[in-house]
Length: 254
Ligand SMILES: O=C(O)CCC(=O)C(=O)O
Image 1 (tube, rainbow, N blue to C red):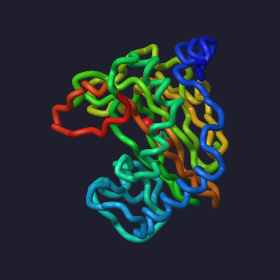
Image 2: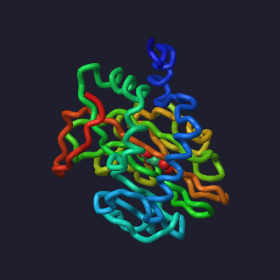
Image 3: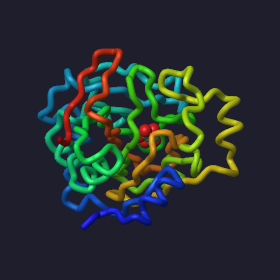
């Protein structure tokens, strides 16, 4: 039996996102929380040379976040982003959850192999964090657009600690700023397409999952609380996708 109903798929097509409810059980959630903290603190049994790691800003400004390069940058829980988590067995196992396989088959077709474009930790450290400007998840280096992302908070995600904010239905607009290599909006475009009165905040419990259409406009704020907002975000793409940057990708399904 299908794990996602026809009614749910219709809601996803209309809104550009779908709340899937709790998918990570308590013990797997605790395992991923511990593993990501160990990775940040430099004590995990992973190959740090393969992982892109970026320290958070101390100002909250996007342009002040650290460099995004491979390798560990110090034992601190103050990382903003850690990519290449397909190389960690715990994160990889979760990334291959049967519900995610079913979603990929529905979106890309049963026979289409599925790769991870990126499997990343996105963090708003306690009383820190960086404003992530309004954008769509679209990359001009790819020969076709990845369509979906599955986003899992590893802590409660609230307005106060920087949960994802979205503009419902905005995926129907197509790519708004194709001139930007990662589809970030200009400030003028953000005022037009993402005004405050249209913003919906996706508050979620730890271990719940939201399916996001990659063209859904989204952003996230800094963290005003003493609770970190750790999250795991995976973009699933057609395994036939080629990148002008000659990147290689990890096969997830098929
Ligand atoms: O975690 C966040 O605050 C935003 C993440 C994001 O933009 C993404 O997963 O595509």
